[in-house]
Every structure is written in structure tokens, then in C-alpha cells.
Amino acid sequence: MFVAKNSSGQLVNALEDELPRANYTCPACKGTVSLKSGKIMRTHFAHRSLEQCQFYSENESVEHLTLKSIFYQWGKKHHRITIERHIAEIQQIADLFIDENLALEIQCSPLSQTRLRERTKAYRENGYHVIWILGEKLWLKESLRSLQKDFLYFSQSLGFYVWEADLTHQVLRLSYLIHEDMHGKLQRKIREFSFGEGELLTIFRFPFQQKQVETLWGNLDKDICTFVRKQLYFQVPKWMKLQEEAYLKGENLLEKEAKDFYPQVTLPRAEEFAQIAQDISWYRRNFLSYYQQLECKDEQILYSPAYYRLFFEKDKS
Image 1 (cartoon, rainbow, N blue to C red):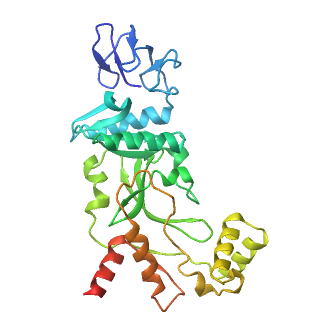
Image 2 (image 1 turned 90 degrees about the horizontal axis):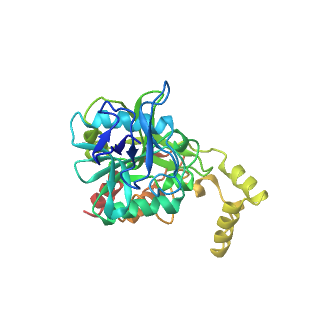
Image 3 (image 1 turned 45 degrees about the vertical axis):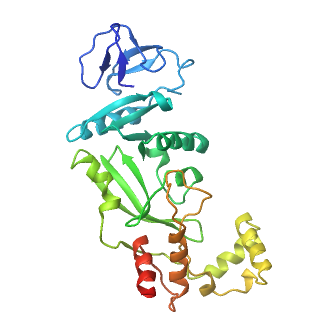
């Protein structure tokens, strides 16, 4: 942590102030914190005991402290920004807080989906917006884990997207047009923004300001029928369930052709997405309807959600 109270009860910021070795306390739990500095970890405060603090579950990693410092210095160039703001009404400490209503949370370690949803819901119900930025342990890789789906955001220009911070390469990474194929593999596009360059809020608004239609060539499995047969042979639960659903319709997955599994690349599925409050059921309906009406099923080009909406609105007119 970078913010503490001194013996006079004043808030001090280790990123801004030259601080002496003295007695400091956590602004939230009032517990004693120590001023620490070293060759690897920049100057910061750490709880002497975390047992009584409900706001910090563990002392922070080098990655978390460094990223908080980077985004703080970046944000204060153009915005009113505070670091480690204690929001009393929701009993949370925001890593960074911009212009009184936007919280930036830099998440470098896994947490439970229940806790993530509780924190997001508390922000939303009290009129705050929250942007989660993922550290290395939570970056998207070959497939989407359940927890990662709860970090996904949505815009009509970029579809499902997520923010990641790469300390090694000094970039804020935007993964967007996020889809999954029938192997459960992730397909997406990536755009990077160098740390410190441009206005931070302008970058975060990019998914809603981008006007051109984005496209992504879907990677299809030309031998999808063999893959499906293997999944059923080894009784993979996901595919056994799909086979059961097919039986109820009087069908059999083993008798299907490759074109019957089109579109192979589809939208991420979840009972709910913690960061997406709006109804996006239209997106899934339009997505499936669009590919079902195509005659050529040998390739699949993926588009921004707005493209599918405009396609069907134009068709109705």
C-alpha cells in the first residue's frame, strides 16, 4: 500500500512525499503499518499484522505495487486521480480512483468468483464504475477459465473484451472480439497501448468510440467430425451432454457432417457475466442467425456485434 496516516492523523502518500521512519497506521483498519523500501520493492507501507484488516488479505506483490504506481503517475497527467481510496459505503479500497466515479482495480492474483461479483456489484449499486485490469497470473491464454469470463466487458464495437497489464513490455493490452472454438480454444484480436502515452480515460473509452467494423478470421477445424467422435468415445462430459441434447431432438452427433457444426467459432458462454449489466441476448441471436443463413460454410469471418445488428435491421427494412 502507498497511503497511510501519520501520527497527526494526516494522509500521506509514499509516491509523493519524502517520509521519515515513524509511526503510521492503515486508514481503513487503523492497524499499524511499517514504511518499507528496498532495491526491488519501491517505498511502500505494509501491515505488521493482517489479521484485523478486512481490506487487505495479503501484503502486495512487486507487480501489484509497481502497476499501481505506473497507472497513478499515468493518470495524474490529465485527470484527478487518487490512489488507494477508502470508499466507506461499500467498505472497499479502490486501487485507483478517477474523477469521483471510476475505480481502477489491478488484479494480480486469483480471487473467488463470489468475491469478484460481490465487489463489482457493490460498486455498481452505489453508482460507481469499475474497470478491472488483469496482472500476469490472470492473463488470457489458450482458453477462457470461468473466473476470466467474469472479467469480460462488452461493447457493440469490439464485442467481448478484457484489459491486461504487461509490466515486462510496459503495455496496457486490450484483448477483444473474444470468441471460443469447438475445442474450447480462445480466438481474439489484440491492441496494445504503451504505458504513459495518451490520456488514460481516452484509452479506456476506446471500446465505445471505435466506429469501424472489426473483423477476425475464425480458425476452423476441417476435421471437426473426427474430433467430435473422439470426444464421445472418451465420454467427455461436455460432449456427452451435447449428445444427450441431440438425442432429445431425434439426432445423433456421430451422423452429422462438418457443415452441421457450423459456426464452429462462437461467443463465450456463462450463466452471467459479472461486468456486463446490459442485456446482450440480441447479440447471440443475431450471431447465430447470421451464420445459419450463410451458404458457404468453409470459412468464418467474425465481426463486431454492431455489424450483425445492422445486417438484420437492414434486412427488415
